Length: 303
Image (cartoon, rainbow, N blue to C red; front, side):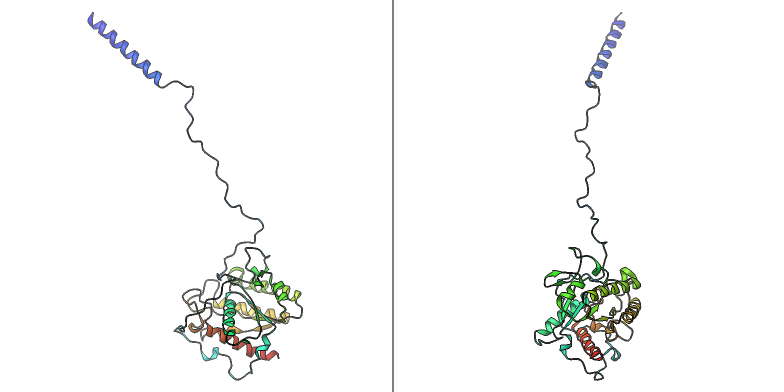
């Protein structure tokens, strides 16, 4: 009898525990919603623009308005230019500085260095390179010169205003154009495309200034050890050949400045290179003077 009562008590206790457990898990028809709701993916902070020109990666990265850096006072050591790379001394009488009074120089940071050198020389010699003007900008090429003017474009400034080159050349009143472009083109557009862009650009300039004399300067060599896969001296030589043929087709003058700015192996000499540890294509003051001496002698054939 005691066993039966004890069993009944255990049964009742077990039933009570089961009912209590069932009550703790209930209380709602569905599980509660999470305290943090997922959000939709955010939209990009900047929407791509359909009106901007394609993004390029020019070799030349100096800013358009930056003053070119002067080289160290000590000359670089290493391979020197050979005598064959110098202008023919005494064989031609250089033109007077006044030849450049109505000239404008167009170019990238290689010519931007020339701009700085001429400005420095004019501090002690006011008629240095005559009254030549400069439309030069870092990263400029014949390809991006054809873009429309925008905040993203690298067109040179004329009197503080960014303009297309055909407009700025006309505005400055030049009668002679010396142009040197290619370092920011050959690697992007290839040789044929770069020549075609140059021809298009020059025809636009000539259309705005029909009486302009056009002097196309050859692309200059790269320092040994600084050549790239597409931008190298072999391709620049081929590009220059294309420029020369272009000039022959259009009655423009081809000026082979590269001939006096290379060593016996075709490289930009150490003494002429201000950034051998960098891009290996920009000039020292010495190179700028050799360049100008050559232009003065070359111009004598047109007088």
